[in-house]
Image: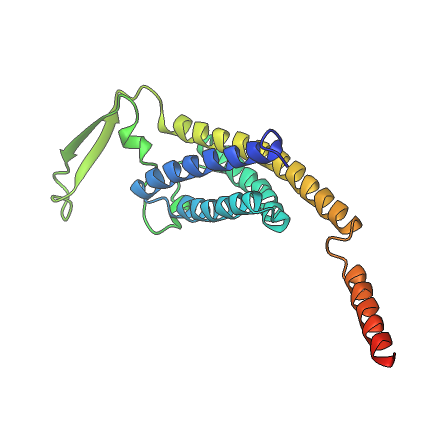
Length: 206
Protein backbone atom coordinates (compact mmCIF):
# COMPACT_ATOMS: atom_id res chain seq x y z
CA UNK A 1 0.00 0.00 0.00
CA UNK A 2 1.62 3.19 -1.18
CA UNK A 3 2.16 6.40 0.70
CA UNK A 4 -0.55 8.19 -1.25
CA UNK A 5 -3.25 6.11 0.46
CA UNK A 6 -4.93 6.48 3.84
CA UNK A 7 -2.03 4.76 5.57
CA UNK A 8 0.23 7.80 5.39
CA UNK A 9 -2.67 10.05 6.32
CA UNK A 10 -3.24 7.96 9.45
CA UNK A 11 0.48 8.14 10.29
CA UNK A 12 0.31 11.94 9.99
CA UNK A 13 -2.84 12.07 12.14
CA UNK A 14 -1.24 9.90 14.82
CA UNK A 15 1.82 12.16 14.86
CA UNK A 16 -0.29 15.29 15.25
CA UNK A 17 -2.39 13.61 17.94
CA UNK A 18 0.74 12.59 19.82
CA UNK A 19 2.07 16.15 19.80
CA UNK A 20 -1.34 17.52 20.91
CA UNK A 21 -1.61 14.93 23.70
CA UNK A 22 1.90 15.71 24.99
CA UNK A 23 1.14 19.44 24.96
CA UNK A 24 -2.05 18.88 26.88
CA UNK A 25 -0.32 16.56 29.33
CA UNK A 26 2.22 19.23 30.23
CA UNK A 27 -0.42 21.83 31.11
CA UNK A 28 -2.56 19.30 32.98
CA UNK A 29 0.50 18.39 35.06
CA UNK A 30 1.06 22.06 35.82
CA UNK A 31 -2.55 22.33 36.98
CA UNK A 32 -2.52 19.05 38.96
CA UNK A 33 -5.52 17.75 36.99
CA UNK A 34 -5.10 14.08 37.86
CA UNK A 35 -8.03 12.63 35.90
CA UNK A 36 -6.98 14.32 32.63
CA UNK A 37 -3.37 13.32 33.33
CA UNK A 38 -4.38 9.66 33.50
CA UNK A 39 -6.56 9.96 30.39
CA UNK A 40 -3.77 11.72 28.47
CA UNK A 41 -1.32 8.99 29.46
CA UNK A 42 -3.62 6.30 28.05
CA UNK A 43 -4.12 8.41 24.93
CA UNK A 44 -0.36 8.64 24.36
CA UNK A 45 0.09 4.87 24.81
CA UNK A 46 -2.73 4.01 22.39
CA UNK A 47 -1.52 6.52 19.79
CA UNK A 48 1.93 4.90 19.87
CA UNK A 49 0.31 1.48 19.43
CA UNK A 50 -1.77 2.78 16.52
CA UNK A 51 1.28 4.36 14.93
CA UNK A 52 3.23 1.12 15.31
CA UNK A 53 0.36 -0.91 13.90
CA UNK A 54 0.06 1.39 10.90
CA UNK A 55 3.78 1.33 10.17
CA UNK A 56 4.14 -2.44 10.68
CA UNK A 57 0.86 -3.51 9.05
CA UNK A 58 -0.66 -4.79 12.31
CA UNK A 59 -4.45 -4.44 11.94
CA UNK A 60 -5.18 -5.46 15.54
CA UNK A 61 -3.28 -2.47 16.89
CA UNK A 62 -5.07 -0.18 14.46
CA UNK A 63 -8.44 -1.62 15.57
CA UNK A 64 -7.50 -0.97 19.22
CA UNK A 65 -6.62 2.59 18.26
CA UNK A 66 -9.99 3.03 16.54
CA UNK A 67 -11.89 1.72 19.58
CA UNK A 68 -9.98 4.04 21.88
CA UNK A 69 -10.67 6.97 19.54
CA UNK A 70 -14.39 6.53 20.23
CA UNK A 71 -13.70 6.46 23.99
CA UNK A 72 -11.49 9.53 23.66
CA UNK A 73 -14.26 11.45 21.91
CA UNK A 74 -16.64 10.57 24.76
CA UNK A 75 -14.13 11.75 27.37
CA UNK A 76 -13.58 15.08 25.64
CA UNK A 77 -17.32 15.62 25.24
CA UNK A 78 -17.57 15.16 29.02
CA UNK A 79 -14.81 17.74 29.55
CA UNK A 80 -16.65 20.23 27.36
CA UNK A 81 -19.83 19.66 29.36
CA UNK A 82 -17.83 19.99 32.60
CA UNK A 83 -16.28 23.35 31.73
CA UNK A 84 -19.50 24.65 30.21
CA UNK A 85 -21.35 23.56 33.36
CA UNK A 86 -23.94 21.50 31.55
CA UNK A 87 -26.55 20.08 33.89
CA UNK A 88 -25.30 19.63 37.44
CA UNK A 89 -21.63 19.89 36.46
CA UNK A 90 -19.58 22.76 37.85
CA UNK A 91 -16.17 23.83 36.59
CA UNK A 92 -15.14 24.87 40.11
CA UNK A 93 -15.64 21.32 41.38
CA UNK A 94 -12.54 19.29 42.30
CA UNK A 95 -13.80 16.29 40.33
CA UNK A 96 -10.85 16.33 37.92
CA UNK A 97 -8.37 16.20 40.80
CA UNK A 98 -10.11 13.13 42.31
CA UNK A 99 -11.12 15.36 45.25
CA UNK A 100 -7.49 15.31 46.42
CA UNK A 101 -6.99 19.05 46.01
CA UNK A 102 -8.88 22.13 44.88
CA UNK A 103 -6.57 23.00 41.99
CA UNK A 104 -8.11 24.29 38.82
CA UNK A 105 -6.90 24.39 35.26
CA UNK A 106 -3.45 25.94 34.82
CA UNK A 107 -5.02 28.34 32.33
CA UNK A 108 -7.23 29.83 35.06
CA UNK A 109 -4.24 31.87 36.30
CA UNK A 110 -1.93 31.87 33.30
CA UNK A 111 -4.21 32.48 30.35
CA UNK A 112 -3.60 35.16 27.71
CA UNK A 113 -3.52 38.59 29.36
CA UNK A 114 -4.17 37.25 32.87
CA UNK A 115 -2.69 39.21 35.76
CA UNK A 116 -2.31 37.28 39.03
CA UNK A 117 -2.65 39.30 42.23
CA UNK A 118 -2.07 38.02 45.75
CA UNK A 119 -3.23 39.73 48.90
CA UNK A 120 -2.58 38.33 52.41
CA UNK A 121 -5.53 37.17 54.46
CA UNK A 122 -5.68 39.12 57.71
CA UNK A 123 -7.95 39.09 60.70
CA UNK A 124 -8.56 35.32 60.65
CA UNK A 125 -6.58 33.06 62.99
CA UNK A 126 -4.49 30.43 61.28
CA UNK A 127 -4.70 32.09 57.86
CA UNK A 128 -2.03 34.79 58.27
CA UNK A 129 0.41 32.73 56.18
CA UNK A 130 -2.12 32.27 53.36
CA UNK A 131 -2.98 34.71 50.60
CA UNK A 132 -6.01 35.36 48.46
CA UNK A 133 -5.31 35.02 44.75
CA UNK A 134 -7.30 37.03 42.24
CA UNK A 135 -6.89 36.91 38.47
CA UNK A 136 -7.91 39.85 36.31
CA UNK A 137 -7.52 41.01 32.74
CA UNK A 138 -7.81 37.62 31.04
CA UNK A 139 -8.41 37.97 27.31
CA UNK A 140 -9.99 34.50 27.21
CA UNK A 141 -11.57 32.72 30.15
CA UNK A 142 -9.82 29.49 31.00
CA UNK A 143 -12.87 27.31 30.42
CA UNK A 144 -12.98 28.36 26.77
CA UNK A 145 -9.31 27.43 26.35
CA UNK A 146 -10.05 24.00 27.81
CA UNK A 147 -13.08 23.63 25.55
CA UNK A 148 -10.94 24.56 22.55
CA UNK A 149 -8.41 21.88 23.54
CA UNK A 150 -11.16 19.27 23.85
CA UNK A 151 -12.77 20.27 20.56
CA UNK A 152 -9.41 19.91 18.80
CA UNK A 153 -8.94 16.47 20.35
CA UNK A 154 -12.42 15.42 19.22
CA UNK A 155 -11.76 16.57 15.66
CA UNK A 156 -8.46 14.70 15.46
CA UNK A 157 -9.96 11.57 17.03
CA UNK A 158 -12.86 11.52 14.57
CA UNK A 159 -10.51 11.77 11.59
CA UNK A 160 -8.30 9.13 13.19
CA UNK A 161 -11.25 6.78 13.69
CA UNK A 162 -12.35 7.10 10.05
CA UNK A 163 -8.86 6.51 8.64
CA UNK A 164 -8.18 3.69 11.10
CA UNK A 165 -11.29 1.87 9.88
CA UNK A 166 -10.22 2.43 6.27
CA UNK A 167 -6.65 1.26 6.87
CA UNK A 168 -7.87 -1.81 8.77
CA UNK A 169 -10.13 -2.77 5.87
CA UNK A 170 -7.24 -2.37 3.41
CA UNK A 171 -4.92 -4.47 5.60
CA UNK A 172 -7.58 -7.18 5.84
CA UNK A 173 -8.15 -7.21 2.09
CA UNK A 174 -4.41 -7.51 1.47
CA UNK A 175 -4.14 -10.42 3.93
CA UNK A 176 -7.10 -12.17 2.29
CA UNK A 177 -5.65 -11.72 -1.20
CA UNK A 178 -2.29 -13.04 0.00
CA UNK A 179 -3.99 -16.08 1.49
CA UNK A 180 -5.84 -16.62 -1.79
CA UNK A 181 -2.63 -16.95 -3.80
CA UNK A 182 -1.19 -19.33 -1.23
CA UNK A 183 0.89 -16.95 0.85
CA UNK A 184 -0.07 -18.47 4.18
CA UNK A 185 -1.47 -21.79 2.96
CA UNK A 186 0.77 -24.74 3.89
CA UNK A 187 -1.12 -27.08 1.53
CA UNK A 188 1.10 -26.47 -1.56
CA UNK A 189 4.19 -26.97 0.58
CA UNK A 190 2.73 -30.24 1.82
CA UNK A 191 2.22 -31.38 -1.76
CA UNK A 192 5.77 -30.47 -2.74
CA UNK A 193 7.16 -32.42 0.21
CA UNK A 194 4.87 -35.35 -0.54
CA UNK A 195 6.02 -35.40 -4.18
CA UNK A 196 9.69 -35.24 -3.15
CA UNK A 197 9.24 -38.11 -0.69
CA UNK A 198 7.44 -40.13 -3.34
CA UNK A 199 10.28 -39.60 -5.84
CA UNK A 200 12.90 -40.56 -3.27
CA UNK A 201 10.97 -43.72 -2.44
CA UNK A 202 10.64 -44.56 -6.14
CA UNK A 203 14.38 -44.10 -6.74
CA UNK A 204 15.32 -46.25 -3.76
CA UNK A 205 12.92 -48.94 -4.95
CA UNK A 206 14.53 -49.00 -8.40
